[in-house]
Length: 439
Image (cartoon, rainbow, N blue to C red):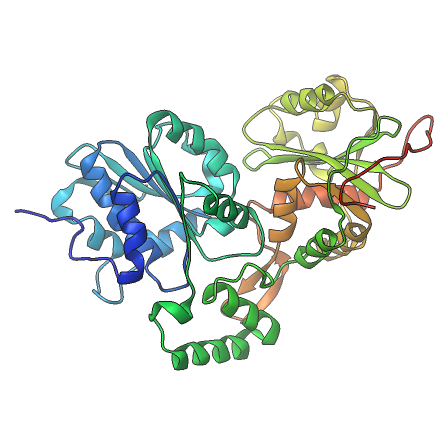
């Protein structure tokens, strides 16, 4: 039986520029398209073609594994009544289909798998040659840092499809792509593509406001349909405070002051990231001069990173679970291990009464913080993206934060806010600094 690819699908008129770019040999594309504009469908059908032109491994990444199954693997195309993967990857082309792993092996030898980027460091076994980052604005940006050199080495391609979620890593990527001859960059809005009538858009906006309230409803509509970068991130704890810091010039060039001590604030992870913020007391608040995050390495790695920075250190603040032996493979607690590896002035910040109280502590400290833009960029993205869980059944926010890639950096910053580090030893008068963009 002859199967033609793409299978029973043709790109819509507004999709054709991206489709032609990829089929013409394009390697990097970022598409900021509104909701219900066929982002994933185009990516699936293009991947089907690519997998039969070049044998290799192909991935379709969503922010979280459970979301990947719901939105792609099990999702049904309302226009055809079939699973989306069955539309794009006809059974006649498959050797095997592994439901549990959400993986398809084609008769050509290529494989395609849908995965959550929340577990990106577990993906390094077989290098891909084609990757789709769906909902990129909500995904862990570290996943691209891991995959990029692989694609560079093997001549592979990457497609980033998303609606905006504030001015985070997706926004910076789009700005970069617009200025690059090596990238495809496109931003569409629902009022220009013809997918929805003005009446339908007005109804959708009214329903969102009715369901989520005026603030969230407006923001969701602007992000999802008007692809606005400036709309507030619904449920975000700190996004407005970080945006205000940027507006006030408190995000810029903030150099390390060698006459002041640097304090570190940690969040510890075994399956998640371990994150460290580096802060100096400037007299009126805090200068965040550095930031580090990594996964799947031992505690000795992080101690060495801290030591190799060459800063004059004050306190090293560890979270309350530093006393949990299950977090380390060595005997004893992380606190003991860190000390044995050479760090002094280590203090475990005890658990407080509630997460809500901790979040309020962070809200108090951000307005008196200055951040080095280059070194703390990824941490700032996380602070902007840290948000509450929305309960679809109750139509209300829960009192708990969403656990995703932004949680660990936000928790490390919480350690700083609660721990309130103190300078040890001699206190030197701060030197005068010419900080660009910061008074």
